[in-house]
Image (cartoon, rainbow, N blue to C red; front, side, top):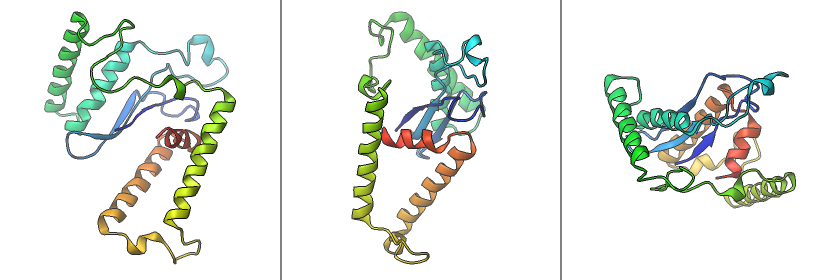
Length: 195
């Protein structure tokens, strides 16, 4: 349901070999999130000299996307996974050659939505205002939903259904995985602000 960019800057130079990852929803149809590395990774003082942070070729990013989409249906790298990946690659190549799904800038136009230019490359002031609005929205939601404020008491979990508690636990595990695999709090908060 969400697509994110993996950046080498916020991960502190960790996991530079990862091109993307997928968190399938488990229904073999949807994904909770897909993250793709759109830029050449690099870390350190000489990184920019060899092209770090430059956008990767569109076809390279699409191949990673096809790989991650295949994980939605087949979680592991099985024969069926590679068959689906090959089928999607052939379909993509066919559409790319015939031009059926590309606009004037060679971007896909069927399904989905294009990136909102107002949400990318913000000025520092615009980014601060966006972060402020997100913080205010979180504060409003917190005041409506309430919070215990004391250890072991007043938590909203007391009235939650088992399904809600399971969803909260899954969300907490996902956030922990993100942190352990190179996505730090600043990047996670930026993702949450764009939701």
